[in-house]
Image (tube, rainbow, N blue to C red; front, side, top):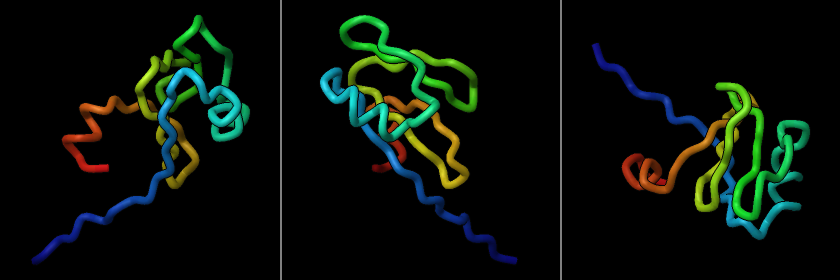
Length: 78
């Protein structure tokens, strides 16, 4: 018996510290607030989370959000 892993489609945006309006539009009501000069707080599948500059915000096919570091993306492929 053979199994195939189904690939999932996800949207992402990188928090650069300078793209607040773009992140707000991407997150919609899941954006909570800006926290300092280089962080934002969002609602994810794990609850409220701090996103630091350079991290990616991922939106799954089910419209759930999560945070992924650039190092983790490099391991799994962008």
